[in-house]
Image 1 (tube, rainbow, N blue to C red):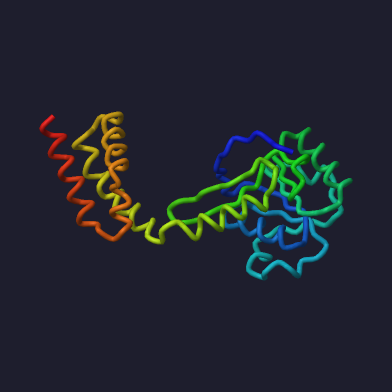
Image 2: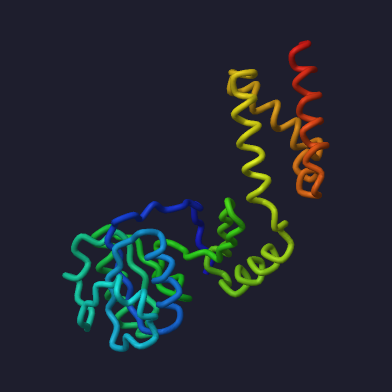
Length: 213
């Protein structure tokens, strides 16, 4: 099933989220929600898979699932296999306009949980629109192996240059054009290769040309 989705990044700080399940998928996704600052509530028969430091941050709800447990919830993830429960959960979430992800069951999903590449400060989300999460996982591993390790250093360097250049080129459109020209010239590749001094010289030379214009 191919689902047309709009990629977005959610801000879930202090927002109640509900998780159903007691398997590794539930733990991994629950940990991600907790790290995002969500107030996580979990319906699970078995708590043993959950690490103690995570378990302390969870509000445990006794099962079985009932629609009333969705009151005040922003987002729901189900890692259970029971089709009848997932169907009931889907209908209840649709009625309440709550976003739902059921692991590996795109027919019940109103949002896709992507494969995520984290190379600070970059976060890259990958989805096949429900066609094959395992393919998204393959691409995630490929990108993790191929992306440079000094991206955070590059971002810090860029931020400093951005602070310097903003007052020199105050117009937003002109400034964007300046940076696009710099990037297309291979500026970032030069920095990532380890030659930050050459990258600085390229920017300084471009700024001199900018002032002449």
